[in-house]
Image (cartoon, rainbow, N blue to C red; front, side, top):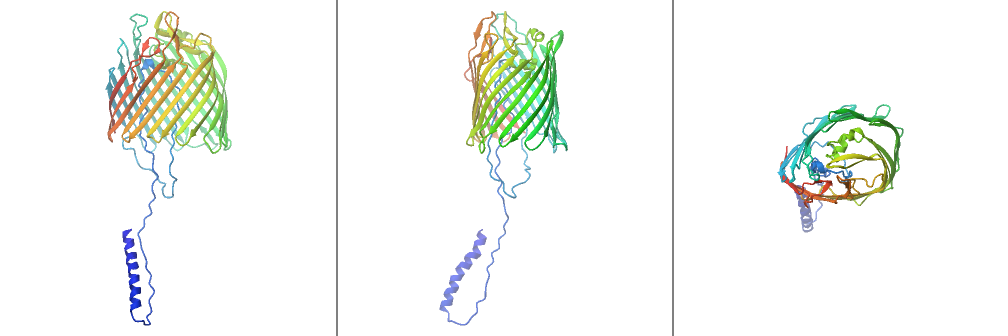
Length: 548
């Protein structure tokens, strides 16, 4: 730019001097030649690249809850908002940047004899395939006799892209080690048991609609669980969708799950099967979305077979020029109540519970709901939902009569409830986020005195904060309340409410290495999710994360 100004400056200073000389010189007939000043500059157009959001690739935080004390929290939806500047000509191009550290390993330890491992490997990929491997382990030992648990596992999945199909497959292995450490019955029955679960799945989906305009995504999955019980499950899902026009789609699905449960070496086990046909329609236009599926379903458990018609009806409308959405619907489901599903809810029910196999039942649930969801500004989102529930054969777990350190499963034939769900989340890029959610249940009908061991109140809050780019701080809080059970003599007992607060931090020392610390149950509350089984109390562990 400076080189460009020099000839202009010389020309501007020379012109006044020439004019002055002309005035002082004698007049004479002199022809002044015409002159042209040409300014030449080498110019290379440069288009400013649009800024990209800074993502921190990381697998979700490891589940640090103790296996015997886990409880279900309703799935929450995270919302992310990113506003990019408009794309300009010549700014479009293939992004060839590669993540310099696609894999990591975390190692740590702490009180309660905690040993922690978390590793992710994502470097095995090519032009038409990618893979992901996750390995994890956590073991702890509390202050009470026989109070110890451990979870070791690994998952691997891969995707292969071809011209017509996108294939995906996965395998997983989880090894649980736990024991009965309750002292409420005053005996010395504290067996240790291993629970092993192997999972496999494979599926494919068409990369582009077929010549007939049909999309499909078949998938097969299987798992084998061994322990006090053994269970084999094979499931499949074959959905097809065809677009009639830009607004209307027709769908047809076929799915099923076939299980066989056996207790130890006793008997031949029982079958637990579901087979379903799922035809339906989907319509979307001018802010309206709706679908109607009516699914004939056959369910068989123990020694009986039932036929159901399960509706799945949804209608939603988004107001024009806004994100405010109103929705309502009716959804009915049939639950297998597999051993693996109930084990993940309460790991103690399996001991000496042959009746679970002898009187196993499936559960039908119906939810009629209405709700809203929207945002306020660019960073705040919220949603709410009111539901009416009807359950047939709802499985409930209570302390066994005469042996309260163990649990038995009972089925309530008819339960009705009303629930209210609310979610609120505020997020600014990836530097700050805070969210709260809650679910409240009111049971209006039940066959027994209580809906045993089911919380009436569930609250959850989480926080993420990055005061500086190299430091990430997280926190959480969980509340459960309104739980009733029976003791070994059959008397009603109200469990104390649960308040669990914790958090963590991670600081990046150098690009490849960071240090982390995690604190669980900060208030050191020895709460009981299941009667007789106290939580571990405060747990602090930390370590290092290496990226490679």
